[in-house]
Image (cartoon, rainbow, N blue to C red; front, side, top):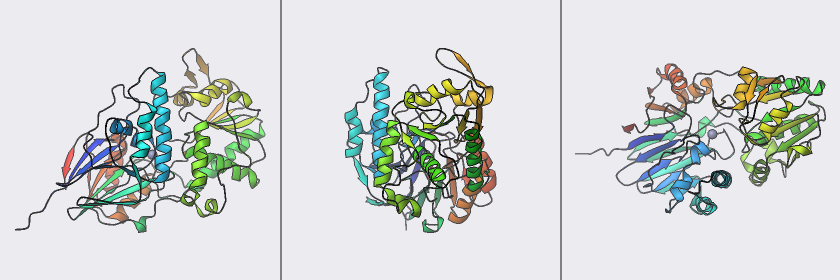
Length: 425
Ligand SMILES: [Zn+2]
């Protein structure tokens, strides 16, 4: 009698929330982790298991990689992912170590961050005992991959974070190149309940907003993330000025980390769209200047800087300096803002609190979502084309996952697991 062996999936993190993504897949002969993220705001970070044959990393955002310091401490794991994911991840982990050390937490040092680099296998396909793993482009950010895995004659696809739409610098995920009809699709649902206008409309809206503020001689603050969003924004502004869509203006980036990542992007230019690939150093901008500190800014100016949510760094300083003047503008390009972020307060309350005082916001605050995540329309399209038997929704709060579930339940079985929930496939 034929005995069907089982495949076990456990959602260790990223269940009903965005943060700490980690999914274990186990057979009798092999156990892998797909992503190994950390919940950064957690006071007592969750200890993930370490007994994996490999950790396969979808992309270089810390909610997918932040646990790797813990995995590599006193341990010699195998980590699989793309080249640029490795380089950016290691930089972000060094940054994390510095911040933690600065707060008096010495659990990790820079040696552990370097061990992540040394443990990395940079490839698109790996064979493990009884298991084949393939990585394919996911859109979202440079080097982001979807993970498809075959074991015990079953197929599992994990999307990581993805989008189907192309952006100015990166192509979206190509559906026709992905395997179809998996037994299980594990899919992100960050914007599962949201339908966005077409990308080109949003880019037009952004340009119109920039033009309006530039014409009134205001400053524009664009808080953003050092990895990918900074390069995408700088390139967008650079090209718009080059083509005369925007006038010449003082445009700056302020983030040493972003500046270093510009270099990785130049080195890996084959990852990007055709027009970007054709340039020798596409991320050396002609009309956007890198500054080391805010005191070097010549106003009026457009500044692209970190941190993305305005908690710290140049973005918090400029928010404080520029909030008072109604000619100025803050442009938020992320759809999600954490509840405690100064930017969320500035947008919704018209003031924000710093450690020392409360700042009134007279400046305009505009949210124009230039997101790297699929919206509901794209998520439904993905399920329709991939035709999974069962779809497991992760990386989205319960409300977003439930709204998406309603839209796809006629196409697939859907479940929205809780943390640590296990499935047999
Ligand atoms: Zn991401």
